[in-house]
Image (cartoon, rainbow over all chains, first blue to last red):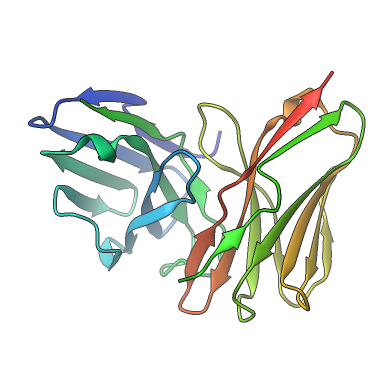
Length: 115
Length: 111
């Protein structure tokens, strides 16, 4: 186990639904990340939080809204998604406050299907 | 933007043989590299890392080689086992503390 958990593991939603993905890290890390993993594509960084402050947003559509209430928890709120948003959403954490030259540890991911 | 590529999308090896998975990176200023293993239905799992001041680093049954001259990274797995079947991808840390990930090589171990 990596110490990073994600729920739910699978999610099917319609385009008009609102849902949230949850991530929790038990490693005492200071930075948390959301990634999107699509088939045959590299991991796409979506959001980075360092010490609960958002430090990076890689031009992600506003239908994805992150929330980091504390250093151990990270949420990704979803609304009015499109079918092309179907992917594996991965959460990761790292020790250093601003990530960088520090290993990121990943959760198991949430497999999202948008109908 | 940055690109991290893998030379082969798939690799099949016989159980007990050694495996070599390759990765090319594009930014000569990248100074930290990680290899991840991702099994079906799971998130990426850290295997081994290497910093740019090193050419080689060994772990348990795995070795990472870094050739900065040609911007090439490789992962060697000794005595490959069925449990090693997974997708392996590398990540580079480029200036600006941004990680870039490759698309992955799918390793299949034949019993």
